[in-house]
Amino acid sequence: MALLGIFISALAPLFLPFLKVPIKGNWNLYQTDASLFYITYGLLGLCVFAYFLRKVSLYQLSTKIYLLWCALGFVAVYFKINNYFGMKFVDNLLSVTLHLKWGWFFLFAGAFVLVLSVKKSTVDLEKNVKEVG
Image (cartoon, rainbow, N blue to C red; front, side):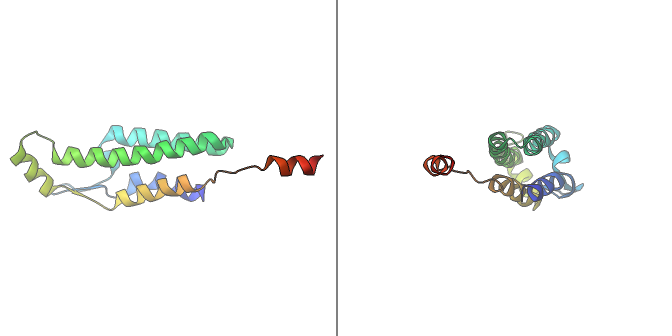
């Protein structure tokens, strides 16, 4: 399940539309904001690194950070569209012409799959001690 989340999270920012710009067409995450793109892939790289090292606690932490980063990126792009110039008339005109697209859904879907791919295990110490001793 983790590999599916990594696959979705890796392909969504590259190939899916995140923003519709009237004259230029659909933009992926890199065209929307390059720094958001690089940080997203950096955090995804941390998730992959922790997954292949089999560090469960680091993997859980990094997937939660990745999910929070995706939510922060969505909010940042939304507010940037609605408050770009600081003038109400121009910002309203801009927010009417720019539209968020369905690529955000797959970015969040990949992040949720990553978070849900590892369950927190509880160990019953008394049961293990009785089995050993």
